[in-house]
Image (cartoon, rainbow, N blue to C red; front, side, top):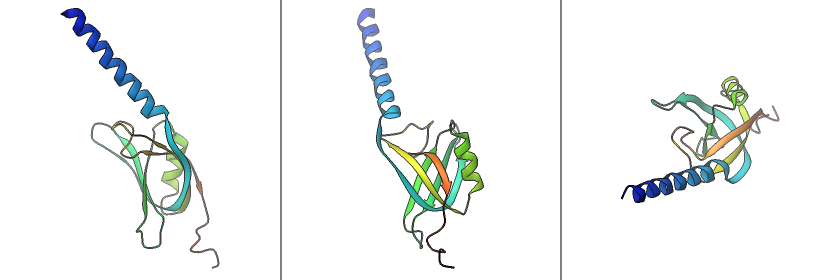
Length: 122
């Protein structure tokens, strides 16, 4: 009986490790999005994660929510400095997420300030 429980436990741990590896390392898509950075904060009670939003429209009807992993210190620093400005985000989309990584499936890997298309000719 102990041998069966041991094998079952090993199988469950192996399946979880395989699922975690797939969700963490496999990218569903990669791309860029531009918009006004309207929110960026470090939130959570047990697991602190960096979460943000950019507005992709004039009325704020199109909101893109994203997360930033703690290992991207330069991205976090740049996003804090660019609050309220027009930015271009490079991101990767994962198949899923874990609560200790972030709230969304979109993880920003780079950020750059851009000129707003709303104020180009002024």
